[in-house]
Image 1 (spheres, rainbow, N blue to C red):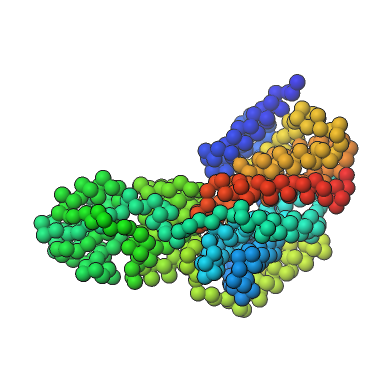
Image 2 (cartoon, one colour):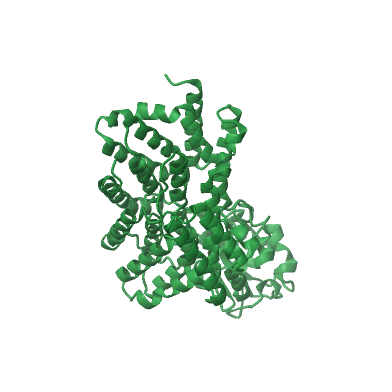
Length: 591
């Protein structure tokens, strides 16, 4: 019978897992709630509660974000991405292979969310110029970034986290390329699978029609100004119709031509106004403002766009200042001057009260913008414009410094000259001192959500060990598999971690399962290293859901995907990786 402290820790684990899976709160907030619960219940004293923030994994991951930002800011990553066009050929298989190899290589050394953010617009442009559906290339892009991440010690935050757990438990640190043999085999297998099983990849038709993708037809209407309209002689801005009716002017057409400044043009009889708002409001406006509805006009992207205005789709990446804020509180219109028509979040379309919607990473916004607005959007660090490319600008002098700092970190870690934490800090400080990015940009590049997630969730692993909860779970849940030997246990640990990672934070899954792996290794008298490797690989490669890994979430809306697309394409790949892990881990890391 488990003791009181064991039961309390298990209750916290179950509650945390439930909250992570249901996403009722942000992951960092859940982690802080877990930390608070552990302190209040007396499961950890205050000094131990700070263990997560003082952990070398947390500091190392923060430094790696800065190192990656230096490479991105100097234009090196984008320059490499642009070279793909020269080598990708015109056929779909070659494009997929070229994208996968390039992103896998980059993701082995830099934060893969940063690399994917650069590659999304380039991949979309490459696909469209070859008349290939965008949905055929973005899933391979996301999956390959995960392939590369498991090839080196610094490839993902999970690798660094599990390495830190191993060191703290008296185990030998993992080498820089220790994961590479298995990681490379999985990368090759994954790319072959994505090319051979292309028929599983969705092919969305008409995805260039943003109006259809965001289901805007019921929110747009062309209304012609009659001679009785009280709007005649006024411009839209001064008429205050927007404030009164909560309706936006999208386009102003006069004599079959769109005006360049629709909100400031004086309205005349027979002018046509393309309006965006709730249909009941649009219908009610006809009598109130003397407008006539063009019922037979089909509203599409061309109807909304003009020489002066264009539909733009932007992605909110991790670390954006928009996360957790509304367009209203961010003063979006004042900053960028463009109109937000709709928000897409994991397949759900938000068209009502868009300005008051709390935004999250992975959301995409459909905007109407002019050339100046687009220029501002392309320069913003808070958004990624997915259907436009920035002008390529490589800061050559700083790029050399950034590359030098990156190689320094790699060499210091590879040859164990200094611990990985020290090497990462040298690289981060070097990026700032070398002016590859400013100190403000360095702070902005850190994903504080992950820092607070680790700070709050790492102590949970400590509490599981101290309370005996990890050992109780081993004896109760995994004990039936012990009689079949360590290989059976490794098989189960990989599977459980992979399933958890499909529905919650990969770092949280690793923190929960790692103490269990260490406890069962001790009880069986075998080396825990194979178990830790299995947990690392399972937590760092999640393909079956769009929420299991950040890069999957990032490509969800730009690719026009559905949840089932990831399940169909990703589940067989997860099973392939599971089989390879069970076969090869005992050979590469004997028990």
